[in-house]
Structures are given as C-alpha cells and as structure tokens.
Length: 429
Image (cartoon, rainbow, N blue to C red; front, side):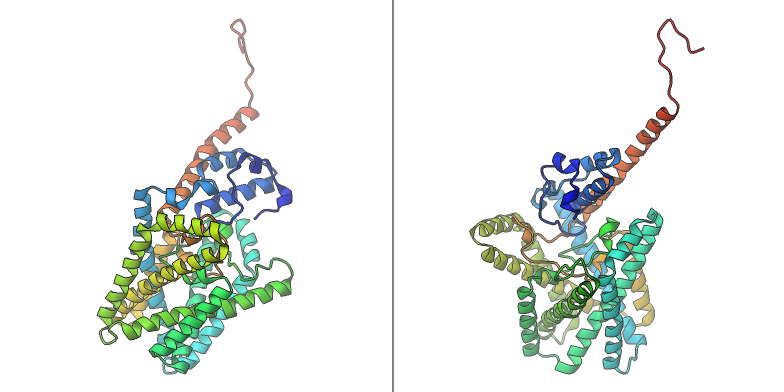
C-alpha cells in the first residue's frame, strides 16, 4: 500500500476507500494500482480520473452484489474451465520428472526435485520487489513476456517442491488411513496457529489473475518483513520451508484419506466420487453464499474468535472442494489417458498456453501465504474465483484507455497549433 505520508487528492475524492486489503488480483486491486500510481505522480491525471470511474472502488465490488448471471458465469468458468486446466497441467507436469529424473529411484528423484523447487521458490520470494520494479519499467510487450516466463518457472518450481514432500512422505511413512488422518490434523493445527489456514484453499475455490503486473510477482510471506536484507531472507526462508511444506502435508493427508476410503480398488469410480463430492459442496457453498456472509458478519460483531473459527470452517470446506476437484480429474486421467511422455508434454504445454492466454497462469502455482481474519464484514468467507468479473474489469480499463488516448492527442494538437478567434467583421486573411 502507498505511504500514508504521500496522500493525494484522490483519497479525498474517494471516501469509499477501505482500509482492509482486497484479495490479490481482484477488481479492488486494480483500483489500488490506479490510486498508487496517482499518488506517486502527485495527483490525479486525466487518464487516472477516467480510469477510476470505470474501475470499481473497493466497496463497490461487494461480491454478494455481483449479478446472479455473472456469479453463475464466474462459478462455471472457475469449476469447468480454469480448475480442470490447472489440474491437467499439474497431473502431466508431475509425471514428467518421473520419466526423466532417476525413474528407478523415486527417493533420489524427489530430493533433487526438492532442491530445485525450494531454491527457486526462495529466490522468487526474496527477490519479488526487484522483479516487480524491473518489470514495471518495461513496455507492455516486455512486461507480458517477463510475466509469463516467471509464471512458467514458478509452475515448475511449485510442482518440484510438492513432488519432493509428497513422494518422500509416501516412501518414508507409508500410505494408510491413520497416517493420513494424523498428518492432516497436525498440519491443519499448525496452519490455524500460524493464522494462514486460507492458504490451503486452491483452484477452483480461488483464482489468481495475471494482472495487474504490479501484483504478478507478489508472494506474501508469513511475517511480512519489508526492510533489512537478512530479515527478509529469514522471512522468505521460513515461509517457503515451513508454511509451504505444512500446506503440502495437509493436502497429502486429505488426498490419501480419499485414496483409502473411496473405492480404492476402482480408480475410475474413485475419481468420479471425488468429483461428486467437490461439485456438491461447491454448489452448496455457492447457493448459501449470501446467508453465510450475513452469519459471518453477525459472528464478527459478537467476538472475533468466534468469527475466526467460522471462517476456518468455511476454509476447510473450500479446501475439501479443491482437493477433491484435483483428485477427481487427476485419478480419471491416470486411469484412462495413456501414460506416455508425449501425452504428458502435450497436455503440459496445451494447458499452460490456454491458462496464459486466459490471463490466469498464476493460478497454477501456490504463491505465499493467505492470512486468516484479515478481511472484515463477511469478506473473510469469500474466496476469490470471480474470473468473469476480473475479465470485465480488465476490458473496462482497456476501453477507458482507448477513449482517453484520442482526446489527449486532440488536446495536445490544439495546444501546439492555436487558432486565433475572429469576429464576423474579421477574416483570418
């Protein structure tokens, strides 16, 4: 957020500006980008003023006030387009190291994957400000190129990080119900204590957009250290080694519980049951969204601790939706698609390209912490998967810039070539 000492006239003109941070990549974040740019420039430019009118203010994007048709579109695109594509990418990218990285020795292969994944994640987290500052100074084409290369590298890093923890736990602790339940409960307790339980909810419950570019490289850390190189490095290291690892353990525990309990001898049927669970819970959450939000506001007024417990419960449901969604499509692909390197590479490339073109490639990796009990007035139970709404906002901002450009050029031309005023009795000759 911009420094409070640099307040501009935009703050006075915008009484609706909220103190609480909006979900990353949300329309409210676009408004923040315009606000910050205006403050750095010393006020509201003509471009910013027109853009501000089209990009909603923070409180002008209450998720319950999105029209029903748009909410249905958001739900459909998240659960039937973005979510499946992300799972296709993960499933096939996961198998690629299995084919090339010491296939006979899964333990050695996993340790190497971990070394690669954790190293890249630490560097990206530690250098996120440098990456952002470099990219925003470039033209739009360089920005898009750098952003997509970054997304692709982070996707590989995330998969290698997860593969390391997951496979090593399978090899060293085994796969059985008690182990899965204990690891899931312990990991969940740690996430609750650290107040980052929302981090465990993933696509399609949440979607991260590739714009604005200022937020593209943001990886929130647990302690949010912003000064001091050693302190920032320690914060980044703790986030990557502890928070990310605990999140992986929680997901593995839930996944293994489903593996053991949902028709373990019938892979296709087991995957189908996971999808039934995922879509059923998702539809219930979708239908009851407004009621749940009202209840969250009521509990927040009663006591913050009660509100936090309720938000964590909703987070658990969204995590179950995410895990079963991924597992359902993953198991079905393993059961019915050919296990061949060519097939894996084709699905890997196609799914990433489609997500990048759709400006949501950063939904693939898990980037940093999402904090509990930060959003107030019922927003804490909202998980941002408003894909269609984000695209609408981007389209509106693009149209506004197109409208501003011609008028600015005409004004500049008029200033450069003034025309003298004449009366009826005068001629310009």
